[in-house]
Image (cartoon, rainbow, N blue to C red; front, side, top):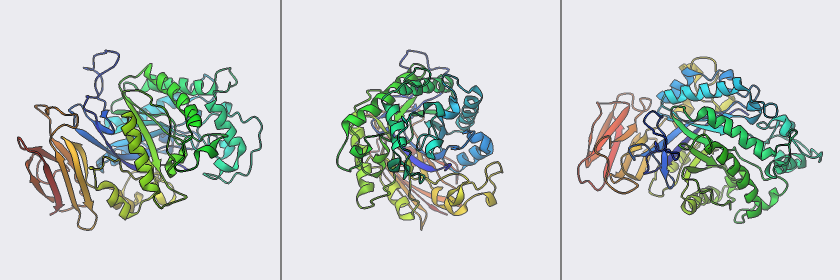
Length: 474
C-alpha cells in the first residue's frame, strides 16, 4: 500500500533548536525544533503543535515525486493548516546495490523535502518499510540485504499476516538485527547505518528539517512471539533493535547534531505491548510510535498511550505519534481535547490518492475540489494551535458547533521568564469551517491579528496566570 496520512504532534523544548553540539555558529543555519521531555518548542521557547501529513511511495521507483507528489500538493497541504510532512524513502531506492547510492533518487527525496520546508512544513525523513522486501510482499529493504538462510517462505497472505505466517520473513529481520554479513562483507545493520549517514549528509542543511525516523514498524525476527504479549516485555530482543538503531543514530550524528532523531519500538507496540529498550541518551532523541489496536480494542488505546508517556518520563525523550488507524469522529474529538494529560494525540488518513482513504484522489493532477476527498477534509482540517506561548493546559474542538477552545499558562514550559519579543500564541482557523469568519473571546489576553485572519495571534496580558481563547463561527 502507498500512504499519505494525517497526524498531530504536541512537543516541547525550552532549549532553542538552533544550538549545535559541535559548536558551529547557527547564524546561517536553518531553524530547528528542540524538546523538553515530550514537548517540542521553537526558537522562542513556545510549545509547537505539529499537525501533518505522511507521504511515502511504496512501489518502484520509491520516490513520491515520481508519483506526482509535487509543489502544488505541498502548498495545498500547508494551506489547510498542516505544518508537518513525514516523508518516506526506502533503503532499496537509496542503495540498490551494496555501497552504491543512487544519487538521483537521493536528489528526488531531498528536492521534495526542500519544497516542503520552503512551504513552511517541518519535515521528518522516514525510512519506510513494511514486511522487509518484495520477496515477502513487502518493501523497503534492498534485495541484496535479504538473507533468510533458505528457511521456508510459508504462506504469504500480505500485510500484516505474513509477519507470523512466514518463517523466512522473520529470519530476514533476525539477520538484520544480528548484523549478519551481507554480500560485500559489511554487517546488514552497519550497512543500514551507513545509508542513514548518506541521508544526513545531504539533509542537514534543509529548511524546516524536523529530523529522522530510523525505521517504520520494525519486526522482531525469529523471537517475535516473546514480544507479542501485552504486559510482558522482551528485553533481550529489544536490545537487538536498540543496537541497530543506535548505530544508525550515531551515523546520523556524524553529520547532523542539530536535528531530532526518532527511534521506533517493535511493531507490537501499536497493539499495547511495551518496550524495554535502553535509553539512547541523546539530547535530541524522540520516540516515534503508532497506535492501531487491530486485535483488541478494549483498553488497548489507553495502554499504548500510557506506555508512550511512561517511555518519555523515563528517558526524557520527545513523543511522536506518527500513525493511527481510526478516522471515527468521536476519537477525533477525544484525542484533541486535552493537553493537560501531557499525552500526544494523533490521527492519520491513509494515502493521498489510494482507494477510499485518499486526501487527494489523483496525484499528478492539481488539488482542485473534484480531486479531493471533501468528507475526509471536513474531518481532518480543524482549528489547531500551531505555537503556544507558554504551558498548554487544555484544548478542545466541538465538531457540531465548531467551537474551539484553548487554555494555557503564559509561563514557558521550561520555566523562567518569556522572551521580550515574539511571545505570542498562534492558532490556525480554517475557512473551511468558518466561511463567514469567526468570533474570538480571550481572557487575560488580546488579539494581535487582523479580523478573520487564517492565523489567529494572541498576546497574553502582563502578569496573567492563565489565558483562555474561544473561537466560534461568525
